[in-house]
Length: 354
Image 1 (cartoon, rainbow, N blue to C red):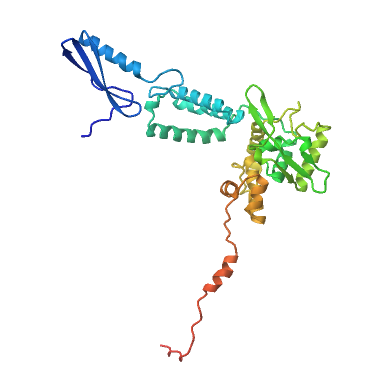
Image 2 (image 1 turned 60 degrees about the vertical axis):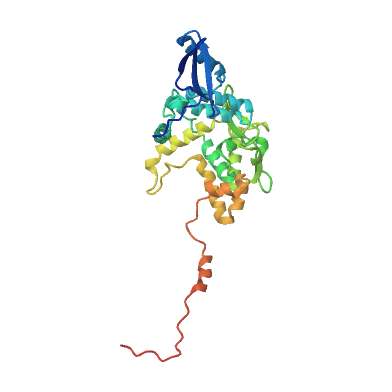
C-alpha cells in the first residue's frame, strides 16, 4: 500500500530521544514548495523539547496575516480577498465589480461561503453548481415578483424599435443622447457612444463609452427607428444635447433591469392572448440583437452583421448571435449535378427479356 503523502505545511510524527544534555525532538516538515526538511529542537524534558520543536516550526511558517490563504481559509474570506485584488488592479469597470460582488453575496456565500478551501472537492463543487443551475432557472421564471417595473408610458415600444434599428444592447439604447441622433439628414443616423450602468452609491448613470470603447459607432437607421425617435423627442420636448432621449420623468437614466421587468410583466400578462404556435416565454430584450444579426447575415452576410453589432470579428457574431441556417445554399445542387451517373451505352443488342 502506498505511503500517504504528507500535506503541505504540516509535520510528521515527532520523535523524542534522550541525550547527554537533555532531550532532542525531531520531525520531518513539508514545505509549501513540496520539499521536505528535518527539524529538531532540544529541551530539559521530553515535553519541553517537543514544545520548542512546535514553536520552531510555527515561527518558520509563512505569515498567516489577513489576505494569506491556506486550507483553513473560508470561501467568504477568499471572495473578499479576490474582490480587493481586482479593485486594486483597476482593470475592471466599477459596474463589473459590482456585478461580481452581487453574485458573491447572492449565490456563492449562501451556498458555500462557510466551507474552507481544504473542504472543497470536485463532488462538493459539482453539487453546488447543479443546485445553483436549477435554482437559477427558477429565479429567472419568477424574478422578483414583488418589485414592479416602471408604469407603461409608450417608451417600451420605442426602446425596442431603436434596438431593432441599431442592434444596440439595451443599456446602449437607453444611453442615446439628444446629441447622438441626427434625424433630419437624408440618411438619419444614431451614434452609439455610451451605456447605462449601476454604480454603488450613485445608482444608474450613463457611462461615456459602450460596453467596450471600440464599440463606438455611427449607424444609419431605418424609417421605423427614425419615427420612434421623433415621436419620443416630440413627447420629451426640448432636451439638452447631453440628456438621454429615453429617461424617467425626473430626467434620470432608465434602469435596464426595470425595462426587462416591465417587458416580463407585459409578456406574461398577454400569454393567453397570443395566437397558437407563438410563445414569447424565452424572448428577452437581447433577443432583438440576435434577430438583427440573423436578418443581416441572411441578407448580406456575417461581415455586415458583425460591423453593425460592433464586433471586431465575425467569430463572436457567428457563435452567439446568428441563427444557424437550416436551409443549405441551393448552389450545392448545381455543383452536385456533375456527379450524375452516366447513362449506359448500348453498343450491343439488349439482352432478351426473361
